[in-house]
Length: 222
Image 1 (cartoon, rainbow, N blue to C red):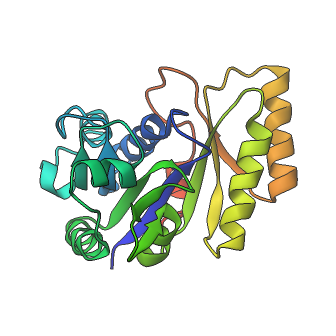
Image 2 (image 1 turned 120 degrees about the vertical axis):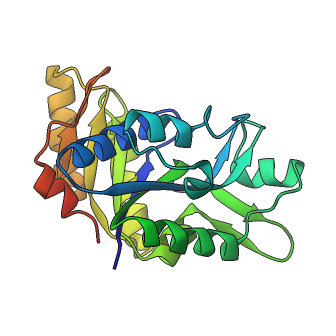
């Protein structure tokens, strides 16, 4: 049975896709057959030009576009709004169908979220659901990607506590844009102290791999 890990972040444009690609690349180079899936991407004209295309290339997965994601939108707005404008609503049944396909193909699947944890996917008078609901449907734990710099303590700890309140297991954090400054080191200390969750890796800009034990990383998948 396939195991999964969800990658969320403290917001948009904090490097979630970059970290996801490095995570998968690192594990694949250590012999683990890890795939990728993202339910919805907005703001890209093609799969190749999207987050999914980036991860597919950088991580060396080489997967066909139809197994990487379910919905692609041109407008660079929240998925629920892009779906409304482009008249292609996101449906739970499609996500679960595609999830079954990707988990049938890979023993480990890394799922990348859209934006932060409170990201609407479908909203109308009849039904609404958010990213947190999707994680619940898949029954997998999460990693939180957060930036290293000023302000990250608040965003990281709030995200972890929100997910705890929603019953969504969090394995820990990966800190991005890390330079090793005294402030960044203290940010990590405080994130761990206040959230009760470990920082599992730090990532600098232009990294080639995650500097973390591959066996420990693969054990995060459940």
